[in-house]
Image (cartoon, rainbow, N blue to C red; front, side, top):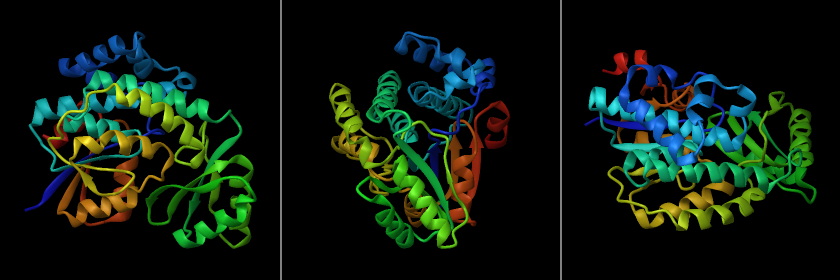
Length: 307
């Protein structure tokens, strides 16, 4: 019996205009955008539909914006097709979309929480102090050794295990730059800084996780209708009592996306439906397993293909 997973994108998938087609065509999507605006007390919908891009790229805006577009797409998908998922997963921020899909988090709570999460992550490290870099075609054990050599009293470590041959590192800017130079000296030419505003999923984010724990403590977590394969463990979780702890750890722990996809395939998933802006995760899934089917739903045209 083949199974289906809904997967939800994280930061980096945003673009001005995202979600507008959904809101123009489906009342259930308009309701989600209105709910987000009400929950935040500002026009997040306008930021999604019109930009400007420099405002949309600010972490405290990006996170609730992607969550909102993803949940709007999810609600339309559910209303128009009746599709259900056997497993849910999201990349970093996307895990919150997955938790909304599971019923663990109410949307309004989630959108307020990720606004705080984005703010805390940005404030944990002053701009310029931290960095992230994509390190391509380097084996994980080799990259770990490069990070140890590059640290020199600072922090740098793998942050995102995205797919075979694509690992992102994060930490202090100096240490990340040293890691790039060491990698290039060893013949790994494809190592480059990313244009991000903070070193996400590194030990430098621990203070952000501590602040997030206080916010999550006030949020009611409901039962999970479907298991969420978590970034921290790459295993399905359906225990609502563990949700907050896993979300707090996720801020400073590496995103085990490659292992999460492999886990879902091992559990029988043959179809991955990416719900939300962009097709980044669909591309990663195909690099991890060429046999599975990937689909993407972010607008009315996508709904027709799925339906």
